[in-house]
Image 1: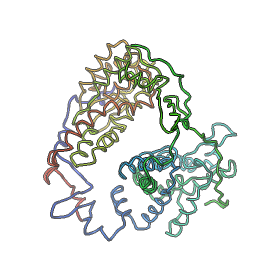
Image 2: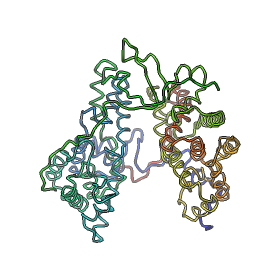
Image 3: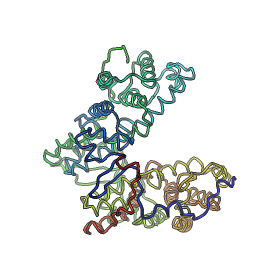
Image 4: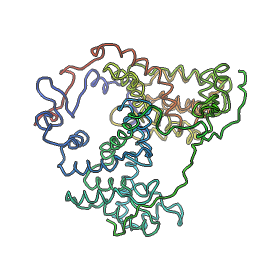
Length: 279
Length: 275
């Protein structure tokens, strides 16, 4: 094996330089001076002057964006703020309210539940991977139809592509709403979103399936120059308001009155009753 | 955007009316079907289990569907004791201690620590990743495979996990997982995964790397028959007591009981200050 890979055993210099210190490029509180945030004094430059979403963007990405970017982001957050407790993360909030968990515990748990590969911010990695790879393929001459065909396991079945199709229903009413926002804010359709639409056309024609809001947001935000990990971070609390709505309703109702279950409402299919063997 | 008119079409998937479980049976009280008069875990009455078996046996049963034999039980319990506390320097424990000394609701101390322990680096996700790694590779010659991995370039900074669950810790070999591996390796229920891991470790040790506690835990979980999907959560369960205990130790202490760095030790880069 290569000697260049041989580490110096117990060389702790890397950690010694950090022990007892916190070094930050983000900012912090200098008492009786200011609270700094990446080149801004928060109380002087941000409070009352920019939106919360601009500060969210600043904290994640490292610079203040133009206002329309975070207006778009705020509109997107609204799209994922349904007060419907049938949605998996929202029901976590409802159950938290039913058990009298604090709003923070319930919202924290609901947000954690939305870190899913099926819906919510957890789909970002797969959806961005797909569309960025697809764009490379397109630039290398591959058609949208071939990109779709590449994802099919067999010729008759629809492909499973992150950012397309959705649970429960086909079609996504949030996309026209966000298209309106995108258009009103004067954003142009970039390469990722343009290809995302081309792929959607193929899916509509061949399988009557469409893009979902996750595919739309990833393509749009990639076109705005964000990286996949930046998109994932920016969207981490995106279901917050929906979870909180569901929590609030059950928290204001009698405990354990939300969606109660009889013993028989659980279908036990396991082992028949048996005696515990003596050890 | 598409020229096709958007119709939102319900898929009409067949959702079950009743959630299925093979784990737990609740027999309703005739006069109140919301209350259970008897609960069974994989067929065993929970109160009979409480009388006749240990906690570790029932934990094993819950996840695997059958009670462990004596050898499996001993191996699992020994691992549980060894992992009961990741210690006060561990990031997950420190998270619970920070929450506690900051006067967070004591009911949140454990979930705060466990959320941090979910991570892909020395956390639950790494345990599951190691279990998948062991399943995939434990038929290969450990020494040859280690050589293959050692030829890859290591990170410029910090430690190198040459594979999930194996690597250096603070630039050196963490001795506790080594000592524990020697102990557990002698148990009859320690099998192919622990043995292969030991061979792999023998090959990477000259390079300053060895078992990490995630790797050893994963190997034991594999030998006990747990699924990789359960590895992350089980690791959290095993570390939970110490994470909670350290948090609670600080819960009634003043906020000054943990360091709050002064300006000389909290270093804000010039670019972060006001331009």
